[in-house]
Every structure is written in C-alpha cells, then in structure tokens.
Length: 137
Image 1 (tube, rainbow, N blue to C red):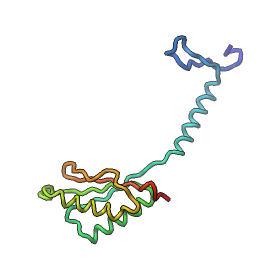
Image 2: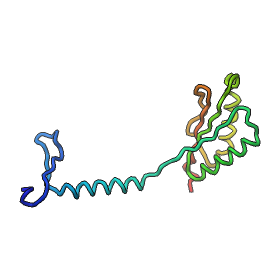
Image 3: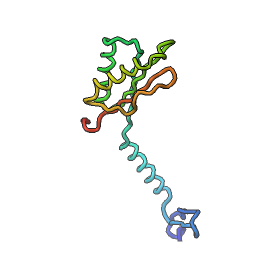
Image 4: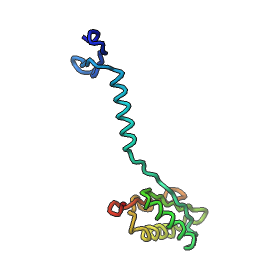
C-alpha cells in the first residue's frame, strides 16, 4: 500500500502487540518534528544566575556597590547567588557572614525573595535570591 501511494511505511510502536505502523512521508515527518523543536526552543526562557562574592570583612561602602548590582540584575529577571568566602580563622565565625547575607536580603526584599537560605558549604556560605513573582515587570 505504501509503495502504491509512493510513501514510507514507518513503525510507530515496535513494542506493542501487534507492532503499530503508519503510512506517511517520513522526510516531511522529520522536518515537521525539527520545526516544532525549534519553536519550542524559542519559547523557552533561560534564567541566568549572576553571582556577587564577599568576604566577612567587606565594609559597608563596597557592600553598597554589590547590593546595587544585585538589584539591577534582579530587576532584569536574573537570579543572584551571594557567596561569602572564608579564609583561615574567618571560618570560625559564620554568624558574621550570615548577618551580612540577611542584611543583603533585607535590603532587596522589595524586589527579591530568598530562594535558598544561607548555607555553609566548606569554606563558603551561599544564598540564592530570585525575583519576587508579584513584582515582575
């Protein structure tokens, strides 16, 4: 039947009992499939994660610059990862870094939510901020 119609016989479901086949133009089928995948890829939204790095001894002046950059990124719809790196004995005082992170979260609470609270991982402490869903533009 497929040869008579000048089409292809395509096995759709080989594991079924009995196997399922269709008569179709296989080249056209592949083209349509690729076109749908490209359209789906265009509709996909890629969320970029930016990072600000601090130290426990970072002063308020420099912290202001970092918070300003984070605010701009969040307003653009990006997530922001805040990383505090410890060196030497600074690791014995994680409460200082946690205070800094909570301070940053408080300054950005009007446009961001804390997606991942501050967590100590080895010699670094991480926190992730995401744009708040009710404040999106």
